[in-house]
Length: 268
Image 1 (spheres, helix red, strand yellow):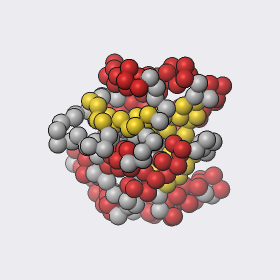
Image 2: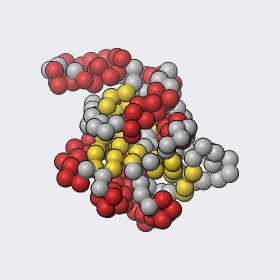
Image 3: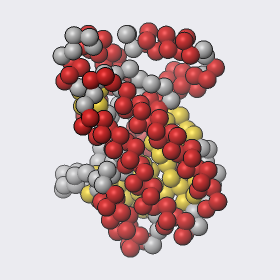
Image 4: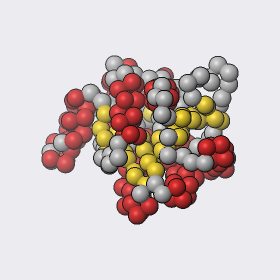
């Protein structure tokens, strides 16, 4: 099987790529916006790709097709986070967040679907987030991008069913990766008389949870099960017990109560 994983130079993407590449029956390609000798991991091939640019994505997909004739599964993992108040987000920040986390998924899917349809099937695994199940304070456009991935994937699953292309949503909770250190922090929010204090307290909670999160290998093992499954589930939640079950019960708790619990947890 030939696997393509976006955002594979670090974090969850790298862990998944390395674990899948350790399996003898899988050929793994990863992507990164920047590829250098120091970033290039030996177990899999890393290609330079900017997922926000459809031409960049299509070139990488065609490279794999030319070499192997197929892509059996794609894992849309590339993403980034911007922290700050929704009101104060700049147009540039909003565009970057949505272009990377949502349109990056769309660009990759549009590039691989014709090849999978011609091959008679395949798997598309879209990485959402617990933040795509519930709105996270001061991560508003990150959550919005992941909510968009959720709705897009639900529709895509229906439309691709006749072609034997299976769409899977994975909703990770907090994992200990470089995502925390790489988060872009809104300077407008940090200096805002209205939001700065609440943002500082909330971000401290978020970073504590992330830094103390699950090890990436846990997600990598789930990814392998999905790739190998003949009939994978549509949705997988992966993370610690409390986060996963809090996400699961959202539909069973009154909205006012759920919102109150979120405010309590995030200290706002």
